[in-house]
Length: 433
Image (tube, rainbow, N blue to C red; front, side):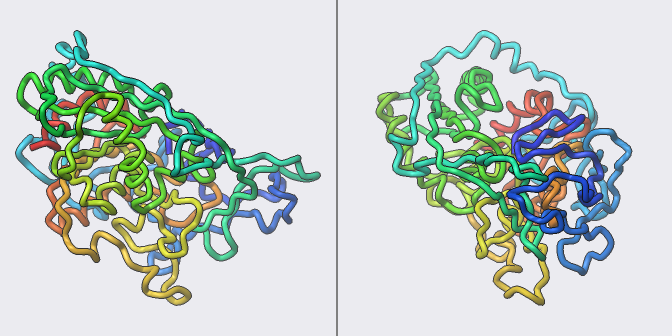
């Protein structure tokens, strides 16, 4: 998901989120695809029985905020974390779970970064007509209005709120921009390390120029190796039924494979450089759903990537189209699918990382204390809590002895700009140690 205004999160799926959301739609609401209103009513959420299917865990959550509920990093259901003095960052030589204070100031590195970047920026575009993967793209379509209803409201499959049905989608072409930054200090006589991030390009979530300038500073200070930065634009739209959602929220190696075969060769050609094939020299980075893609690229293709950096990663059930083999989407990276084992096989109950051999990954990621919570009205499935997903991931990484830092940021929203500015220099340095 992308960041949205928090006073009323206007979803591209339609509608607003008003915490705590747990009121089913009224009979007067509009319907989709001319279906009976009873079909489209969201199922009643389960907030009381942890042993029943699709439990929504609201324990210890303060809903008094008019925006997103504010979380306590020391909620007893979360793994233990170390509080840091206000404005202090996690130690660069430590692993584990850390809580940032509420003040997010620009670090001293940004003063020097204001004079950059000093290397080459090479930009090019790619269209779906030129691509063999994700071609054509998809987008949600709005058919003619029904007599008594709203024409494009998604709803969940009967008995399974984790399975979102979108009545109308259509094929759609896309064009995206790719920005390549080559610092002046990189050598040209050898394969180069690189960091690739999603939601880049002209319409990206995070300004590439800021990242490029910061990389210059950190290379000059010998805190990271000389490397290339690649920002890849998203495919368009957001959430289920969009091209961006299909690429970023699908839990497989498909996006990593597409990057490997269609983006990186073009980067080498346009930049007149050679990129390293060593997974230790390759890092993925993302924001929200592109943060989930960063996890997926490394998890499903550890032969390609060993380093992950993500802000507010969407480690929730945003995958669409629905995949019966992995019905919880990115939620199942760290936690079991939330449905009932009585009606589904044990395969559905598996969480990937806890039940897989250890992989040589190094992971830095962050969530905010006011991050997203159930922004999809039709899916009260217990797998749409961004903070809980981040906490569950931290527990798995800790229990399975991964190299990781998890940062819980106070006074921080979804993909929080001040938190990114405060933490990015140290995060990049930690990632490449």
